[in-house]
Image (cartoon, rainbow, N blue to C red; front, side):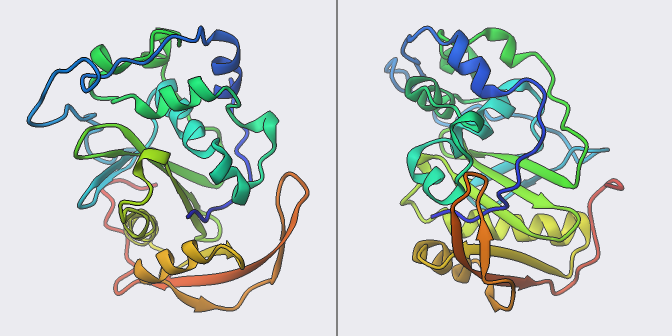
Length: 254
């Protein structure tokens, strides 16, 4: 249940390299697994929108521009499992292929790394800042408000107004897909002033089509074929989302 822009960003050190070479196979121990309880999860504190950084909140998710290499690695981990790659087709050189590393990253609570950070990954991921590469894309990482775990990856093309998004495995089947795509449309409308937001999905990906409909997207025209990065050519359909008021209300100029 994912639709997204499949062009790959040119990132500096790839999370795939970090996870593949530095993972030692230890289990990740979250506060849940340690038997601890908490009324409210600790959440990241991204602050308000500022130059090159954005944040927004929905009913069950909080999104923000990746701030650390941990955020960046988690975004790639969310997109790297088999189900997501069935539709994304990035190729193994662009994903985190180590199953344990990928799953561990998706279990991290970025607002509570003291108890949820996997011992098999380098702790500098938590402190090394991430600077997004130059280019016409804006990415937001999403966390669950109920338990604080990384839960979603959202991408916007600031050239075309096209959006895409992927949920982490633990966030699928909970009705969060429409919330993710609704957030992507809101991000494009209110932070970048797009009157019309576009999304595409593979014809056979009926789940994405239905989820986009629930998020307020409607069928539209567009090129019927697309070639994924791995060379697979697919038949696609386009959908659009119209803003009631497309004027940007972001606190800073993007």
